[in-house]
Every structure is written in structure tokens, then in C-alpha cells.
Image (cartoon, rainbow, N blue to C red; front, side, top):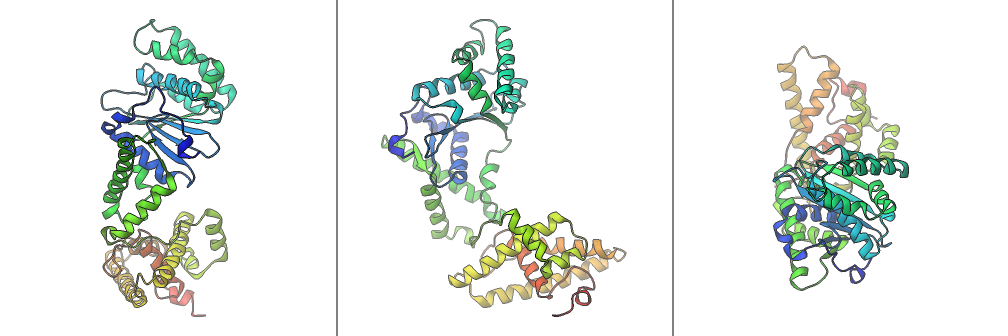
Length: 387
């Protein structure tokens, strides 16, 4: 949906007052990083945060902080005001609720039975059952007191609208809202992760600020936001970090690689490493290999620097083996090999003084295992002779 055709702010929104809602800014940033390129993310337009799809359908999110109470209990006024606003907005803007999604997000706070019932209702039949429970609950409330007016307003939208919203409503309870943003940036070292999150949230906030000041629609195309954000990271050499060249491979690619049994996979199997550990090693190996090629081709890293890093890692492997043999002389062969691998994976080492993506060192160790410069089994050179 082009920004020019987005609806005018719904009656319940308050774009000019958004600056005090830091939770909404965080959620805005999350969806700008998570949404497909052609999706538009808005703030206080159709809801606290809205995601507008090219086909005209929408995703509504109401984000509530539990600092001053619990907005997820059965009697929470905020809860039923949200559902009433969803129903009203759909009617006002002629949005079909049966083709939209609704999300009630709370930063901590134990949920009541009704929001959990709603969140679990994913079929028409389940939504009818949930609506019946809501009506029964409403019937037991005193008229005009507490949440009753908002709940009654929601129910007045009619069973069809109510059931459509219930069926497509999900609930999320998250202690730290910034975790959602960290998950999109986890390829960066932990030392710079919080600064990167702050930069991303700040850019999202500043752009929305600018749109509101200039009386434009408070909505941002996700691909444009990400383009500006990554340009910012690159321009400022954020914390001197080398950016990943490839996304994490999908499970099918990982499974196919494991099936091919490259040497580094056989090395891990020799010490009975878990399937999860091997899958992670394959992912790290593939991403690291892609990074080396990309960084070298783009002249971001001098090729000899990879050789120097490998030498440091080989020495690190030797020291880890000696330390484990001294501290745990009775350790059986397979547990010893697993511990050697895990200790090596914990290594934190820069490349040309720049911080590396979190997977790169582990991937580099597996690259070295692939050519027999390191190994996890104490007799790896005998088990895997040179080809």
C-alpha cells in the first residue's frame, strides 16, 4: 500500500503525543527491521504500531507497559479499550478484520484467562467459544463501572466482527522489549549490540518525528529504513565492526551439507557432538566462508590477515588442549573433544583490530578442522589422514 493511499489517522490515535511512549518507538523499530521490503510500518495511525501490506491488509499492534498496572487481566480497561478500538477502526477505515491480524503486546504482567483464551482461538469455532466466554464475563460486570463500557462497546460491533478479531488476535508478553531488536542484530558482537539497538531505535524515532513535524503520514517503508540504517552503520564503521556478507542458511541447506559429510562435520561426529552442535557448526562455517570471500573481494580485509588469524586460532587450539589435559586428565576421549571444541568456540579475537560477527571465530575453527590444522578428537590426525 503506497504511503499516499494510507488511511487518515483513526479516531483513537494520537500521533502528536507519541513521543512519551518509548515502548511504541521500540516496537516500531522492531517491525521496520522485521517486515518484508514492500511493507510500510506506521506509528499511531491505525494503532500504536501498524504494518500495511501491499494487498491492502494490515497488522495492528497495541503495545502496553505494565509499569502502572497489569493491562492483560480480565478486568483491564486497556485490554477491552483496545478491542473496542480495533472494531471501530476497521469499521471507520473499511478494513476487513477477517483479512487482518491483531496483536496485543505487553511488557511483563501475568495475563488473564480471557486474553489467553483469545490468543489460543485460531479457528472460527474456537473464536465463537471464546466470544461466548467474554459475553458471560461481561454479563457479570456492573453497568458503567470499570472495563464494562469498553467491553460492551466491543461486543456492540457484532458477533461477526468480534469473532474475526478474536480469531486473528495474538498475545505476547515480553520482559525486555529491546530483545526483539537484538534478535535482528545478533550477528554483531555483544559488546556493540546495545549501541546498535539504540542507534536503530533512534533512527526510527527521528524519522517519525520528522514526518509528524512536517504533517506527513507517520509511516515508513521498511526497505528504505533498513537501507538508511545499514548505510549509517557502514559510514560510521560502527564500533569498527565487519558486517556479515550472508544470511544464516536455511535448514534444508544445512541438512544437505551434513549429509555430504565434509571433514569438519566428520571431526565433530568423531567426538559424538550433538546434532544441534553440528548444525550450528555448518551454519557458522558457511557464513564465515562467504564473509572471507566477500571481504577479500571488496578489499575490506587484507587476505594475509586471514592467514594471521588462522595462526592465532591454531595456537589457541593447542593451548586449550593442553589446559584440558592438565585440568581434566581423566576425561574420556569424546567429552574431552567436545570440551575442546566448546572452549575454542568461546574465543574472542579481532581481525585487523575490528570486531567480528559472533559466528566468525567458530566458523574459522571449522574451516581449520576441514583442512586438519585443528581437531577435536585427541587422535584426529590418525583418524583423518591427509587425502
